Length: 253
Image (cartoon, rainbow, N blue to C red; front, side, top):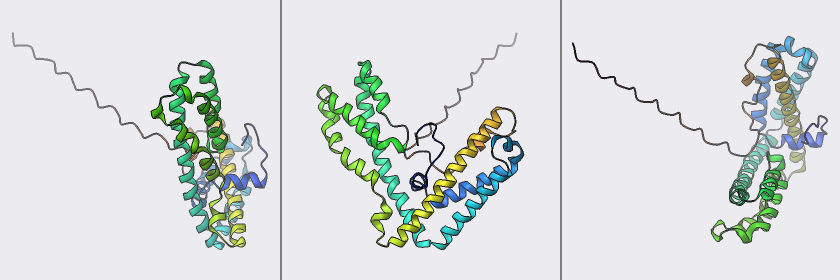
């Protein structure tokens, strides 16, 4: 979604919803509704009062009805999300490799450093464009790179990676147009709920920062839904406590 864009078409919401497991969207929405009901008085002046809450709860109910009435579509969607996560993880792995390779060159070349920063994607939505931009930089720099970085191999992977990102696994798996239509309806409500949760979280964090809501900022965040397919770094182990210093006892005088 472009920065600052608020209005989203049903098609855009469907594309957003396609990224997420509908069971996890449902669980995230139920938790968000609980926070919203608890804090509705404070949130009202941030556009999230009772009227907006009732609309959100109606969307939760419709989402539940679609999922319970279309088990075949839900099964297809779950498989699609698993397949998508696999494709997205592959793509982010490619980005990590190429960014690291070009990063060594960029440390000696300011122009490349700026271009590398601009080309690197920040979320799943920018993966396709980011991969192609990074590929262009890699192609321009490959004569300066050592053979062991396998620049040509990375470049040969670009079309396959980008094609996989655009393939809808549901369309591939399902031969029945009715199931595809039902899955798209679930995707739409996944997208609607996701966007409403994000808006609620923004409002909640603003209310907390302004002292209008006594809550932890971490409550108003996504807990079950990933922000991106980019794997999070492994948690670092806590440093071991420093050994206690032993003070030698003084001899008795």
